[in-house]
Amino acid sequence: MEDKLPREHVDIQFLSLCVSLLAFLGLAYWAGDIVWFKDFQPFITLISGIFALFIGVIALLRYYTKQSSLNFLFIGIGFLGVGLLDIFQVVLDLGGIGNLFTGISTQVYPVTSVLSKTFLSVVMFISWLVSRKEGKSSKGRKKNETLLMGLVAGSFVLFIGVFIFLMIAGVVVDSLAVIIVGLVSLMFLILSLLGYLLNRGWVTDDFNYWIIFLISFLILSQVFYLPFFNLEYSNMMNLSVWARFFAYIGLLIGFLNSIYVMFQKEVSTQKELAKKNKQLDETKAKIEEAYLMLREEKWSLARSKGSVDKILKDVIGKK
Image 1 (spheres, rainbow, N blue to C red):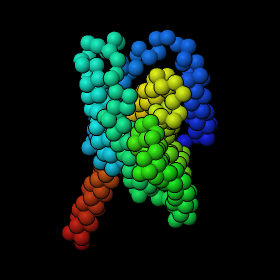
Image 2 (cartoon, one colour):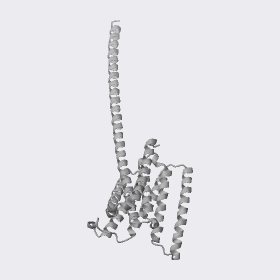
Image 3 (cartoon, rainbow, N blue to C red):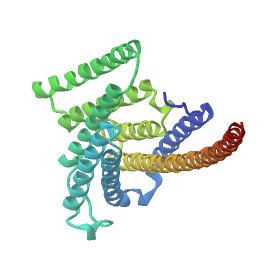
Image 4 (spheres, helix red, strand yellow):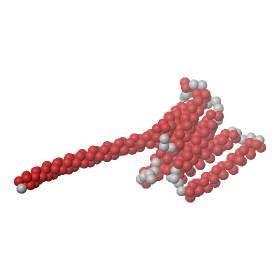
């Protein structure tokens, strides 16, 4: 059974998550007054794509070196795909890296951007399913998880069904297809967040907390991305990009922290092995010393016995 993290440590983690979310919402409130905010959107998107590639490589290395969980495999594949899509979209929109701070996107909702968000949300949901299967949750807890997620998914399906009906009926709604796909992505992200929270893996492993951090900011990013929330399209799209950027930073910190924890555990294990080897060497030396002492005593007894036998022979011979 894995050791639980200190209660104070867990409380501080989730308090920092709440503070981070509130701080970002504060940024969202003042974003309209920041003139240069939109100029960094392509650059932040590019950096986010690079971070995604980096996260994907680390996740795959973590999986292939430790062979511990399929969760890392899915996260690695997902982030590699998302990183490639994001970088490709930036280069395609701007016509090259040289226009990074001067170019303007020609598409309102790029197809690759929509696919990237949907793909990542599905990957995160699959990663939760894998971790749930590998976990040891009770049947009662799994039943409650399934019931709650069924209610959430059912609500989203009904809501999405309304928009699909509007699309079939020919009602003119701007970016209706983007709304439907965006709601599907949001549904998978919320289900993933609920899954990781109810799974309680964050009680024993810091990395699960950073996944929750990632999904929380991805949900914010998706909310700002949905067209019917876009009171000011430019600002909302910028906030969506920045939220995703902070989400990637959080998971990257989580991976680096997990590597550090693994390194510390390895150092501790090596020290423990060295200590045990030293104890074994000391025990071996004591056993060898005891053996030599017993052997000397045996030789002494043998010599004494030989002297006694000789005396008895002399006495018998004289008689």
